[in-house]
Image (cartoon, rainbow, N blue to C red):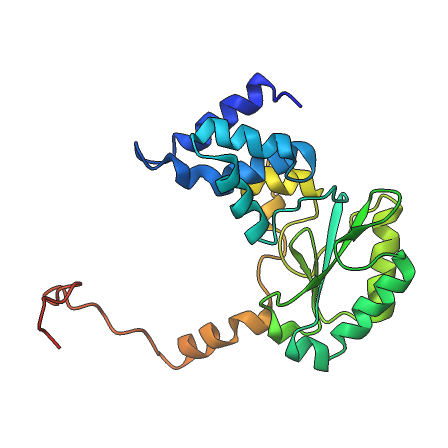
Length: 230
């Protein structure tokens, strides 16, 4: 497909964030940009990034297949990711994934026939204190179970947008990609919703109660040691 002048202007805006000669660093957000347009990274999206940045299509393709957040097949409106790593698995993560797989009729990286949900078997979602955890378009649903997960999937299929346990209110995967490309969420107050959980703040609260702080930086200590210094 041919990308609009608006998308080209947005791609140029991404490149302008980087110093002259370093524009290839714009590739990651630019891949989010084209994924936000198409729903996944298409061959046309790869060619577009290649043209804008001035690198080969092979280089763009290599990056787009290395990172799991870039999808090379059509993806649903909602990416449902279930953590089944060690702690989440012990706490029932695999049972959650199996329940969703049975209900949705799809497996890892597959999309339901209505195009609404893509199921993903996640290696880790960095939320062990809330295990078992799942995300929808990268927003957390904590301490879930098979029944709750299936109920969540049904809500998404019915056009609802359940409130995450933590993080901003849900938006579609395409809308999420625009934000990951560097544009703010234009929904009033959206990013202020449920931004942190109590378990994540325990360490900070204990430190405040006991007056524990990090050591101050000595301004006379060089940040880079000279050759031969221990």
